Amino acid sequence: MEKSLIDEAVSTLDLQGSNVKESTVEDKDLQAGASAGDAQQTNSEENKDEAPEAVPMKLTWEMIYSLSVLLGMGYTFGRIKINRDIDAKQVKKKIASILACKGIISPFLVVPAIVCLKAGLELEDENGNPITEDTPNLDLILIVIDGQHRMEALRQLNKKLKKEGKTEYEGYVYLPLISEYDVPTLLREANSATNPWDGMDWVTQLLATAKEKGISTEKLEWVKEKAKTGSDSAAWSWVNGGKTNSKTVCIKASTNDQKLEELADTTSFEEDKKLYEAAAKSFEGNSAKVLGWKVLPEWIYKQLDSLIKRDMKRSEAMNLLVAFLEGIGATNAQEISQMKKSANQSKDNMIITKLNELFADFNLKH
Image 1: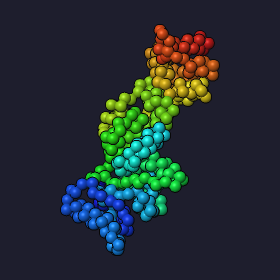
Image 2: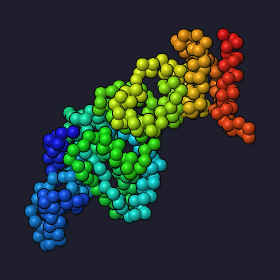
Image 3: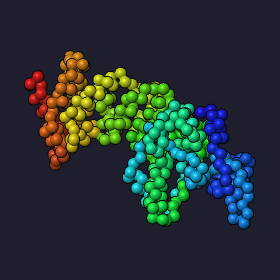
Image 4: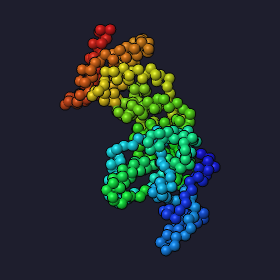
């Protein structure tokens, strides 16, 4: 990211008015120290009978600004479209934390929307509408990089407090404390440092990096979508030959373009999806949860490898398995979905045994 681009974006974030609340994060140089002194002086003057004339302030890398001031001046907030989705459970935990601490204990990390757009990232506002370079008042839009769960918790909590006529809690915002950065790396490091990412979060990071690098995101987007109703391990397995991609693999791919291209490769993607789509025709409704268990794609690809080793063409083997999956039927699908481990067998082994029986019967008929 060129410094000139960030300087240009930051220069648009002018704050005016004597009610601005700010404090220094770290006095890195005389200029930062001077800004802090000016801010403190402004605050002290507010307590006098006569308030001084408003002094223009800029949102800089060393300053923290209150959320209410930014909102009052017309600023709005958005998110990177492929950032981790809001988790209702996490929001509840954050609300409990705010109440326990009687306020927000750490600020929200944001960057100007234009910086994210220049990095090739898709953005959306609080209502899910796309943010583009043609969006009105783009210079008044800030993108939350770290703290979107805290911000949503604060929004929900303050809405309730306002309705009850009680005092609302304040939130605070700051820009990165460095002037040179690229947003995908910032997103990854900020979140992994505060709350270790799970597999789903790393898929999100890979999407951001792939988009920035111009690497196909089709497969990655599919994996993220399917992982929402199952596990990232199962989602990967469906389009990765029955094998999952571990967190370690995803971490390496986030910093290695070649590995990322391998994960995002779509050579057999369209064909592999047919297996999932066929299974989805049988495993639907209450039994659809089986699609999110990696035991099913692992079993399917094991059968595919076995058929190919018996000199069957891959396309023919795929067609055979598609027909089998579509013909499992609702009754068998429901039985598989309700299986539980016994004293002698694990749930996965019981499912595998059932699938083997069904496939043997299918082969006899075909």
